[in-house]
Image 1 (cartoon, rainbow, N blue to C red):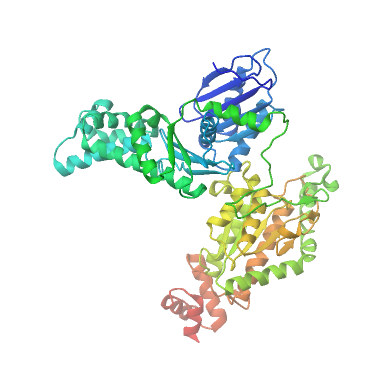
Image 2 (image 1 turned 30 degrees about the vertical axis):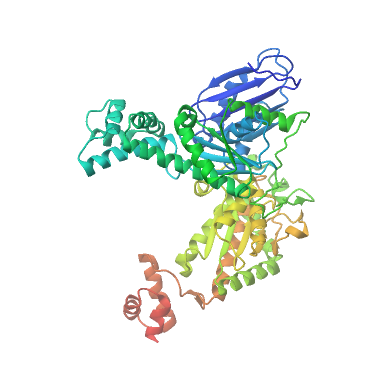
Length: 609
């Protein structure tokens, strides 16, 4: 059992799809304590289940164990800052006063390799092939890159899953082509206790990822007996892994720089011949390469990370509110508020909300909402400037993006989704982006709003450019996800707008949006429930922005929607009435003109004129 000489005590945890391992390093001359637990993939469990999993692991701390100095946790499926925030939050429930470094199981494995060798290459690249596959690199300057890891439906090239699945597919393909049943097919039938290739259909339909990955060992067995089909599958898998490893390295360092490739995962570590095959291909693709297997258990990487971040420290070293975005955004800093946001203050009028008679409670909420227009009217000049930016953008072929978290994000998506039917705009002309993605529309995405990198990435992946306008919606004005998005949009040359309900923000000049709309609607009736007045005010502002912008774009005549998309019976009846009002034609003539014009109102009006 390895020992650590430091007096500080550390806990390392590594969780994967097969099992979880915890290692307690008590410090001094005490031996380390190692234990195994059930599987844990962050994408497959709830926050409560994660905390429960950590509670089981906490049992490693026996009576007399020194208090922990720090914890490092690497979990499969952790990709974003929101994921890492989930890990830290769950750990804080179990170890409330212990700082936690959260990451994925790839970094723990790579660090285990780094701290077990004497060489100092420009970068180290972990090439992992187990049930799934992925590469993870880190330079000598600590810059990291994850390459792959998209899961078995989108990636996992060269993994046990892909090898097993290709074995199944190839065995039946060559049966069709040659009319002969291969040695590979024989191995697979025997492994699954099946009697006929037709039995593969029902088996594969019900098999999960791990069951298919388990077939990889039988592909290796068939290849060892000379089966050409199996050999070709493994050749292709080795080529995929080597290419991904080399591509990962090229994203981190210049071609020709010394790189150490560490082979990890059950497929590579349990199949030395295959690992050698991958190694040869890596050296061919990257001549200045050293290829070694991961020589010690990757859980030691978690211990090293805990020591690296918390030796002699008592605070979390993963800063929040700062985001590095592909080397292009140095820092997206969330502004401070010079006073408590009105949306977080208590409303004195509703102090007895829980005891008010029903009628008075309803009256109070109506009266509070009645104050919204007055607050918005004070921001009229800023709203006008925003409309001007949007209209200019549309005329230049640009787009309007709303981006927010929670209620703010949902309202942005709602307004964007109404533009195509109301104004016949292309679906991409007005877009809504919500932290946490599609499921956050109907279910809270805990921690998503704190991920500034995800906000920046969303802007990046939508291809925002200098013709576009990006409106960040953040009730408090301090949502990291929104500020990450605004910083990225600003860097790309887009016009930026912040819609918030906190007039006390102190925004640095360098990161200040082109327009800030910050009405003070006062405290909510229910303290902090910003889906109330702030939500209503948000909807009103967005209504104004898109409606008036579309009027300026000629999509309204008088107060009529002359560009609506008549996609259902109600809208077709409305289209007939609009054509009648504009042209003076009767309903029959209007209907006929619309049918000839494919229900495009403007075209129908021109016909009748």
